[in-house]
Amino acid sequence: MRLNILRQDAENSVLAPLRTHGWEATIEREDEEGDGQLVIAATRQDVTRRAALLFSSGTDNRIYKRLESEADVILYRGEPYMVQSFTAGVTKPVKALGDFHLILVDWNRATSGKLGITQVMDEDTTTPTLEPRRFLSETPIDAIWARLSQLRSATLARKMIAQRALIDHATLDADDISTKGEGVAFAVRNAIDYFAPKEAHNVSQRVLNLYYGSLSFAFAELLASPKGARTLAELEGATKQGHGLYTLDGPHEGVADFTVGALKSGFFSRWAKTMVATSIVSVDQKPKKPDDLAALPADSWFTLEQLFARIPELGDIYVDVFDGPPAWLGAIYQPDLNQRSAFNASGEKATASYILLVDSSGRSKAEDLQAFPGPLREITQVASGRNARHFRVAVDHPGAQYWHEVLPLHSSPFQRNALTLPLFGALQEYRATCVVILYALSILVRYRPSLWRRIQEGDLDQFRALIETFLTIVERMLPQQFLETITGQPISVHQPGSFYS
Image 1: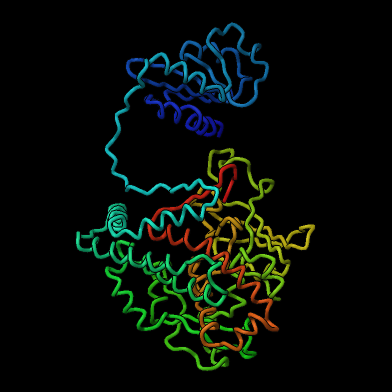
Image 2 (image 1 turned 90 degrees about the horizontal axis):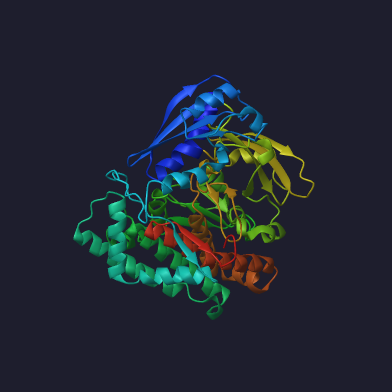
């Protein structure tokens, strides 16, 4: 068992740094005598160096003296314990494992001059990837819009599409790239025109502009994908079958129970197919009255309250306006409930971690958490000391090193690590939820003028505050999310001096 730990430490702290600096390094000898020992051999150019690694400094003097004849330096794990006593008569350096970097610097100095060693690189057969694009700006959204504006150029859009095709190993001929590029450029121009400064419009116009602007961005997303639509006309043909969504007044003809559902035909279902591995839950025809909803699949429709519940950034205003629990939870790692290292004493990776899922509203119950996505188990409510409700949850991640790699977490400048309930059975994409809400609001603006006026200036004005907050979130979040999906490149935005923006 101790040899396993030694091997792991040798790999992380000695072998990996050596290889990074161009040394050919291997474990030359292992021995279980004492608490365990390894001898590592490293060669660069014509120079060979050896390092011995002991499980602890408190190792028999005979072993130290034997290793002195084999190694140039002797390293030990952990804290020093009576080192001078155990190493009496040993003249080779004896150092803590954490000091190996200083030794590596000396070994490098002995095998190079002004120029470093040229490392022979193996032929790269891996799939090329796009590194995250980092925007450092006092106002990140301005940097995002500047990048989006570049895609108004058909030439730059074509170059972006050609690059994505190369990365995805997709075959696109020159005509495909040209046609797609022109479609992306046109759709992005359209979207930018719709996403006008909010000060220039009233709330009604903002709703309509943001919905149609988001629809244009979704067009650009599908056209930019190597496997997506080839022409803008192809997507316009899909919208002739409808937008793929329907609305239905609730039994009380209010805002909270205003219902939105998904249809099998139309644009939305086509867009959703690019986001989920399985089809979303949808229906063939729009129901005619609220009572018809009971006969439909439960996940094929949602009320506006249930949709707003899936926007973590709404926070307190959602709780003030609605009575139900939010459909999202904050996810927080719990160090005191987990082993300190990613590896246990036998060198094996951890396959599960404990986290807290937090409902700041205090309205969720443990049973509600069963509907949340991910490999969750052992859902247990624990004391929080506040109005919020805390739930300790085990997350299984046998194929991943960290728990957050297996959960579909949403993060933004306003809310980090939020786990949300899916939409239409399997849809976790934040931008899709926002588009569904914008669609519903656009219907209210255009076809429910009496209800919309009550929201704007009557007895339902609490919803106006909620909607205006939501629109502000959309104006900040959707341009970034669509820039990522159009270019196929993750975005990291930071303000100077801040941790996260």
